[in-house]
Image (cartoon, rainbow, N blue to C red; front, side):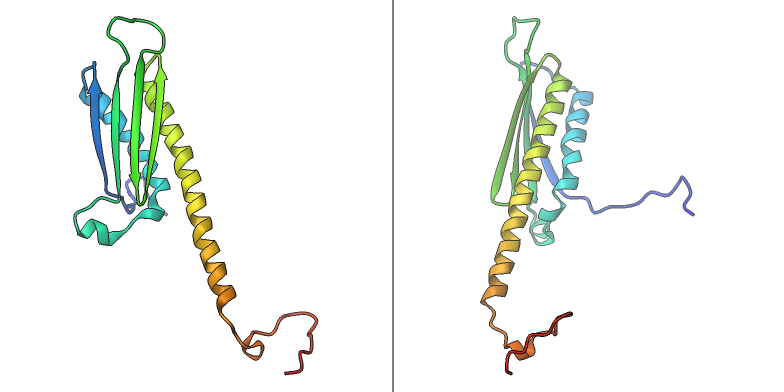
Length: 158
């Protein structure tokens, strides 16, 4: 049985995050919040992990985050915005959100990126599976070399 002191090490992706603040000051707590939210998306991106690119010094995934106020003189309403652009292999995903609170806008961006990543991942996996099915169909194997099927046996005159 494991005690409370054990920590499991997982495979961490290398994600480069660039943060830009417009018309507001970027504090350490705000920077930590953004990094925490964007890094939480890594669990959906493990399928795109490539050790060869990391050895060459390139990141698998890059994120550009911009936060700020839409205007300087407004005090109420949807005045804060968060925007994030995520670079995946052969694909860019982008999410924008506005809110009364900057933290809400960051949460909305994270949720939208999560939906887009899941959608892109499903399409990517479907394309891989489709290619495998096409390859299997193109392979011509003799009926004598096939594995026998359970159930009723059809005589093919071999």
